[in-house]
Image 1: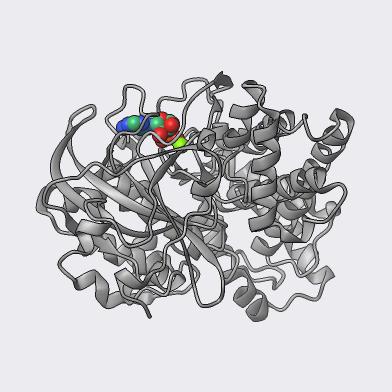
Image 2: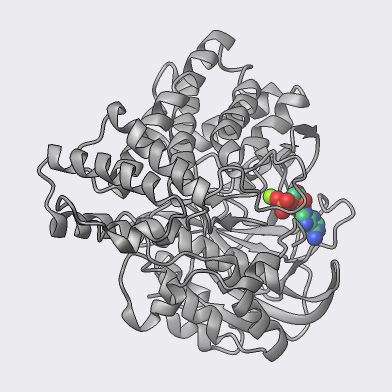
Amino acid sequence: MKKLDQLNFENSFARLPETFHSRLRPTPLPEPYLVSFNTDAARLIDLDQGEALSADFAEHFVGNRLMPGSDPLAMLYAGHQFGHYVPQLGDGRAILLGEVKNQAGEAWEIQLKGAGTTPYSRSGDGRAVLRSSIREYLCSEAMHGLGIPTTRALCIVGSDQEVYRESIESAAVVTRLAPSHVRFGSFEVFFYRRQQEQIVMLADYVITRHFPHLADAADKYPRLLGEVVARTARLMAKWQAVGFSHGVMNTDNMSILGLTFDYGPFGFMDAFDPGYICNHSDHEGRYAYDQQPYIGLWNLGCLAQALTPVIPVEEARAVLDTYWPAFGQHYLELMGAKLGLSRVGHEDAALIEGLLDIMQAGRVDYTHFFRALGHFSSTPGEPNAMLRDQFIDRPAFDAWAEAYRARLHGEASEDAERKARMDSANPKYILRNYLAQIAIEKAEKERDFTEVQRLLVLLHRPFDEQPEMAHYAALPPGWAQHISVSCSS
Ligand code: AMP
Ligand code: MG
């Protein structure tokens, strides 16, 4: 395990030409204090957890002091925001310190989000607020706990410096870890600037570092696109299956590695509602829950277009055509696992859709119901009252349950064995908005960060019963309906 000054930073992105980034230092924040430290993420970079106790830990992870070897920069990128191309975005408040290699040989980029203005800040203040930093920190770790690819979060450092949003809030910096922060928009910026050479350099950079098996292939660029298509398709399937909405699926928030990236107004659904919009600023529902798979492909289309200088259009089209089969297959597998089916096929689609239809009609809680479904008794005549009572239209549930029972008998499913499998597919705990909200209010009003830590530990193991924490699996309280989550962060 390493001390802070032994992390051995490198910054391969900094070695790309100046057109790719702007070197700069974070803007200091006064009197930083540690809000939360994530020992799990520290292990990714072999960082000794005792370092979090040192007096200058907060100084380093707020950006006031630099660790040896770090070479901070803001990355350039562009992106399609709500369908419209915005030519220059770039890290307006995130600063990449560099990457740290762990003993297993994996390189993790370390980025401070909220570390001050950059040449790409436009009218922004370069800051992030404590509220949104807690949300990003907890959600990225919750997603990891759920087995969904995501950026990780090492710590949050706060400062009492005021930040002006809809109201006055306080500043914080969340330290993000990812193998790469390259996004679709990192390619788009050079396509629109007609800088073909940069597209080649960036594609080669990504291949060398993240897809080395493609390095010598004659068709390495179409295959790179193929990898991104496959990963994105699987990621969308995972979001849909767990009931997650990202909220701002702009192409600058789409990871080239298929990671869940940039947590803003995200939400986990409570009652099942395909039209669920988690972002109150998304008036047209462009990024509604049921739109995500389509938007995933739309965004890949933007990436494919940006790669047309190195991939013939017909080939790019053929690669994009692999999206729906990959999405459909993975979604089916995931939903089959949620139903406890040991083999799932296209003939099961009606059973899955039939359930989602009656859940939607009855506004049944998505997470709660699937976890409870593990208790389904396949014994004929058994009413399964605990499940049935979650529906208003009970005969509709009974009809579905009959079909489900027949399907289970068809594969000689055994109740106890199936429940064990279902418990590892249906989380008991998710980061509902109200849980995050309680932790945020305690942090903001009382400077009490224990709830953040408690949720972090809880959500790292969302499939485990954790009986002493059962109340965190409760349905949302009435006041939760009034939590408004906007883009403001
Ligand atoms: P986001 O919606 O968080 O993905 O941000 C979109 C773009 O706006 C990115 O280029 C961000 O760096 C930039 N941005 C967001 N908030 C701020 C801020 N407070 N100051 C400067 N830039 C920001
Ligand atoms: Mg972003």
